[in-house]
Image (tube, rainbow, N blue to C red; front, side):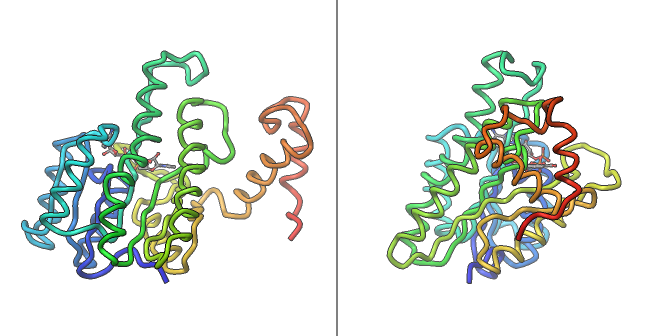
Length: 281
Ligand SMILES: NC(=O)c1ccc[n+]([C@@H]2O[C@H](COP(=O)([O-])OP(=O)(O)OC[C@H]3O[C@@H](n4cnc5c(N)ncnc54)[C@H](O)[C@@H]3O)[C@@H](O)[C@H]2O)c1
C-alpha cells in the first residue's frame, strides 16, 4: 500500500506557497514530516514556511524560491535536500503557470506557450529527474504526485496552452507510473492528481468549489488505496459527470466525430442527451 503523509518522511512540494500545495504542506506538517517547499513567490513562501516551522521546528523546513522550469536549480536543490533530510518519500510536482495575456487560443503569443509548457510540463519532468534517483537509491517507499487537470482530459476550449500542458502531464505521469512498477522492488509509485474546481490563489471561495484541504484529503485516501488516477469531484461536479465527459471525449476518436464535438453546434443536443443517460458499466 502506498503512503503519502508519513511520520519521519520527507515531503518536497512545488507550488507549496499557495492553494493545493500549501494545503499539502500543512498536512505534511501535521503528519510530522520534514518539508521542502518550492515556489517562485518568495513572500508567500516566507509566510507558510514560518507557519510550518512553528509546527515542526525550523530545522525541519526548507523554503526555496526557485522556478521549477530551471532543471539545473532543481538538481542542485535535490543535492542539498539529500544532504540535509535524505531523499523525499513524497514528491509533489504541483506548481503550474496559468499565463494570461492572450485570448487563450492557438495564436496566443509564443512566450505564453513557452512559459506554460516549461513550467507545467518540464516542471514535473525536472522534479522527477532531480529527485527520483535519490528516492530509488534510498530503498524507501515513496510516492510521486504530479498535478494534472480535467482540462488535460476533456480539453474545454478557453486556454489551449494550459490544456495542452496538462494533457502532457497525464501522458508523462502514466509513463512514469509504468516505468516505476516495472522496476525491481517497485517501492516508488506515481499518481496523477486531477483536482476539480478548487478555491486557490487569491480567489474568493464560492459555492460549488472545494477547498484545497478537501483535495489533499481525497488525494491521501486515494494513494492509500494505491490508485493512480486521483479524479477529485467538487460540490458542482460529481465523479459520475466527469466520467461521462471523459467517455464522450474518448468516443470522439472512436466514432470519428469532429474535434471537441462537445462544443460543436451540430453535436450539442446529442451531447446533452448523452449526459442524461447512465454510462454503460
Ligand atoms: N484550483 C483549481 O481549480 C485547479 C484545478 C485543476 C488543476 N489545478 C492545478 O493545481 C495545481 C496547484 O494550483 P493551485 O490551484 O493551488 O494554484 P495557486 O496559484 O494557489 O498555487 C500555485 C503555486 O505555484 C507557484 N508557481 C507558479 N509558477 C511556478 C514556478 N515556475 N516554479 C515554482 N512555483 C511556481 C505559484 O507561485 C503558486 O504559489 C496546479 O498544477 C494547477 O494547474 C488547480
